[in-house]
Length: 452
Image 1 (cartoon, rainbow, N blue to C red):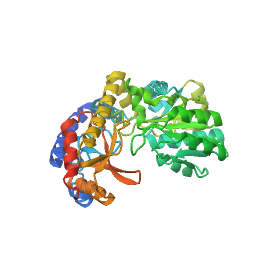
Image 2: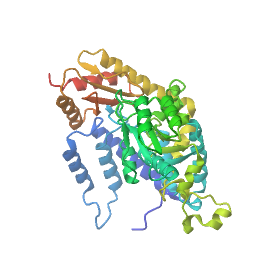
Image 3: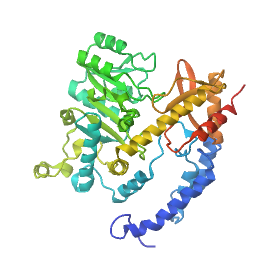
């Protein structure tokens, strides 16, 4: 047997074409075999199916049917975010055009740690990051793997600007990556501010900034993980200004509202932040990963400067070769910006805004359906596209059991969230192709196994 073909080069596309047919056929076969949003049977059953399909994962002699077998197994055992009854997490179904662009990025395999590995990709990244930075009122942006890395990087930049005594101040509803970032960076324990209504309380923030010695980094949230709530950004920004505190906004979920003329105003005050986390594999419908951190003061980026002679030698930089090593704490980086660039260019602001408007409207429809159903209780009207609800009169144990029953039978995928001291089912609606019949079917499925 000869050497296996490569994906790029003059004959790469010829080698890929039949393989793509195999992948597409396997995806179709696996999806049809799944027959729902999630494979039935639970973890042990799924693991056994995968093990059977994989067999000896490193055989002495290769298996020419491995691509078909393993892609089929992956599709059959997937939680499919494109299925209208898969609505648990901030995990959007990727756009076809974005997935196609992602294939091109994989084929060409640029690495954005030096210009000589990624000439066009580095130029494209500059265009896209500056465009997204302008959306938040910032000057520049860095590509990250998602909200977690963006939050960690924001805390790192703040520490490098203000020193190791920096105190992170965040609401009790903040994403777990923020206190984790303080721990990773060796900062003092964060100051946790009450969020009695699910959002950061400006008065409590003011008190914390008054009582706790600085310097301070305040982390606000635009789109909480549990309920999709948005902190009062203008009031928080005012408190930060009054106390000389730095402001970071975790808008990993909510930043997509910027594309919508109808919903953009909900992010008023975002432009006052020093850094903002965006995550386009949520309300951007990108394949994971697709994160961005915007930066208002480009001087903050000096903290990331690093010299490695084989990547950014001084004489190369002086000669005009771009220095990419200071654009991320990571060295090897995929050209994830390509899929984002293709999506922004293909859909434009109007197209992306229409997707955002659609899922926000879908959430309101679902909330109305819950509110008018005597068998269910609605937590609150949705702020973005997340709806918390629960069977009326059910205990927390019953709510948890209903969710697990739906998961193990493969009939629906719902999340869970704790609010107001009770456990709620969480529907995160990110599929713009879902419709009213799907929403009604979801409620019917939840109603079925609920103990009465």
